[in-house]
Image 1 (cartoon, protein in one colour):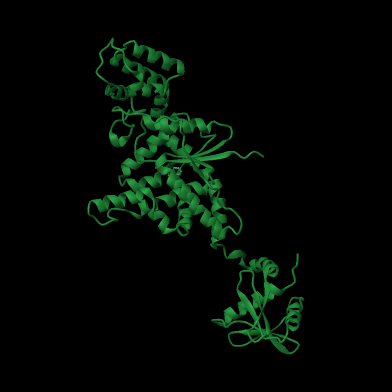
Image 2 (tube, rainbow, N blue to C red):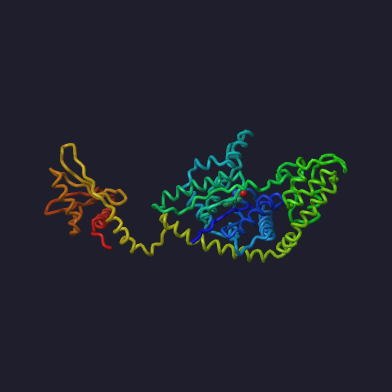
Length: 451
Ligand code: TRP
């Protein structure tokens, strides 16, 4: 059996994708999903969007625009599991299970939270001013996104590496606490694509909405053309040689050109191609590559219910993985149905019988005693004192023989008798029900192992 690599990433739905998002994240993710070895899970992180944005219109518009962008960009939903985070109720449920094991100190160290605190302190405000629990717990929700599907690789930007590490940390802790030797969660790894272009924006700084220097992706050819016309260049006139290696217009061209196109464009710039014409060439290149996808994008945006259908199929696929896994995790932490509880002691009986153990020791006065410990280490019995080790050994042997135990209950404790004498005693219990449960546990621990 070949196990495919599970690649998972989320896109926070707060903005409209621009050319930089396309070249830096969307295009490489779609390409990666076409690899036969890839099992890709891509989703709209719309719960994460609520942390940063309280404008419902904007949230909704962005969800639609981002879904349409990925689909128009060629994402094949038959190959990839493409869904909205908010369509998977198992994710917030897992978030809570993880919240209960995540160390607060770990979250105190999250960059995004720390940056907000630092800013508040700098401004002389309360350190937590304006910081929601959503922002604070952001990494736990992200850990649930990742761990829910046991992702191997998580393609993210550098600013997200810490969050993937926290997912490992939290997952490991859960495994340790509840796994009983079983690793529920796969340890994810952040995947940073070094080769992927970080596109420069109109002014040459990294293309980013916060710098207001973006080139729109699918809105319209005219918008794209207008933005390109605002790319900052040097003042060399037509006919003067341009320096391609110091031109972000050339860098943008490069990110979408074949090697041959790139070489040709470089030659023409060196020969003095005017900037106006160069911008034209860039527009032609982008329009040639993105024009059809733009058509598809507008079609999708005009029929959102078609997208809804696709996303519902995606949610179904994702939940087919998430629901049974979450059921296992609920079981592990002790959130279990009451229905099968009658049968449960049978299982514990065998386990306890295998694992219960006698521990002997000597008192200061030289007498010999032993304790009987249950599988979980709880003390079931403490023996009386025996003059020699041999006598104590004979008693433990008899207790293990499988003979019916002579247990005599007193008020809130009990003792075990052999041949007319008490040989060992229980602790004092809080009430009779606990005492009786302990007697049951003792009988189970000493019952012969049946297979
Ligand atoms: N926090 C990520 C970002 O802002 C988006 C995201 C949410 C994500 N959940 C994720 C990315 C799970 C990878 C895996 O970029």
